[in-house]
Length: 350
Image (cartoon, rainbow, N blue to C red):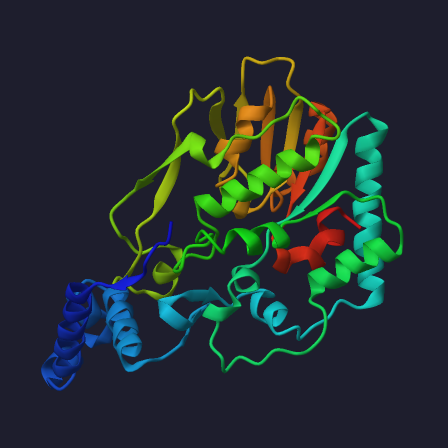
């Protein structure tokens, strides 16, 4: 399924009118003097509308660089925060000491899991520009040479590391020939991209758990919703860039029950997710995740008798390793988006 990003003409026209009125009102000394700029913005329902009008005007004029975002071809939006763009450009290779630190952190944790009889799997979802470089502006130059992810995979292989790594790039690059796998205007993959990742995770675990078998794409139907601004238009303040979100709904009977609890932390409430099925013969799982795993969770929960999903950014109140010690799962999955692989030693306290 291909989703299409479109400009909402009504929203664009509204923003143009708003900006014209706002700029015109600045010519009226009485309003600017008596009310001040802050009150003036409030009269037009605040800063958000001004940002929206400013953004829509820039989009209409063809601007490409926005807050944490880069407008690419065909209306695709690319995240620019963190290492996304530097990874795409191969601008900051990982130095040898950092590669060694990453290997040590992964090996130490895998050894800990295996010592307790568990299975460890390190999963790397690719950044959107890695799978869709054709939607990054041509003006963004790329340095020749391996990516940071290529460096890590090669380093682990050259050092005969036993770390079980699932590099999803080959499967997704193949699947993109027939399906759109990432939302054009969101920083994440769509449910179809997540589904192909789920299949590869189950396949990677089958050698340890032969009873595992993933569902087929035909076991689901696509349910599409009305076009709406997804996460990146909201970041830049656009209401005209809209895209139709969708979900994959099972046409089979779902076995998993998923629930969550909100726990207080020093940085505000954090939500943790749990799942369970009635099949007690299935393995248990502990999954350290980032936001990319949210779309995988409904698929993969079908295959574990119990599973706990913990965001790897969890604060000390929801410690990764304390949950591992309490749960003692059969499977530990550590899923980390490509742009954050350099942070692995810090995540494991190395």
